[in-house]
Length: 190
Image (tube, rainbow, N blue to C red; front, side, top):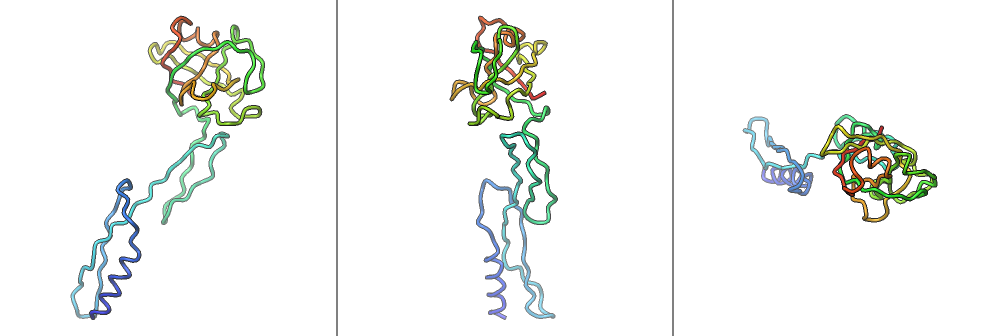
């Protein structure tokens, strides 16, 4: 009986995963029945982590293939990186260049265009799938003001934080005055 109890406890301990306090946990109890007539003896309560799925959009905007979670969970669908249901928040500044990272010429005094922050655009320039895509930009402080603009450039380095856009004068004027210089914005892909 003692050796059976020892092996049962060892088997349970061997299947227990290390506990990560950042992960949600669930409690699993084990019971050993040494003989058909003996009463059931609780051995040990084992806490096993519950795996939470992480869905990350890919930089090329394609749908991520179904990801399977551990266990008998159903697969989950990833969100398209260019989904119009995702709202991005940041700052809007303005710029006057006429040619940029997307290898596209434009007249920013006439056409509403944007330079996407480098964090969301990634390292690719020419041929980047975000080039020529359209975004709707909304002034967070005056939600009645918005503009649809085309992505034609990349805001270099850390000049634009995640969620921020650099707008052409034509786009910025639809949201506020150029003298303001910086606006709080929300935007999404169109």
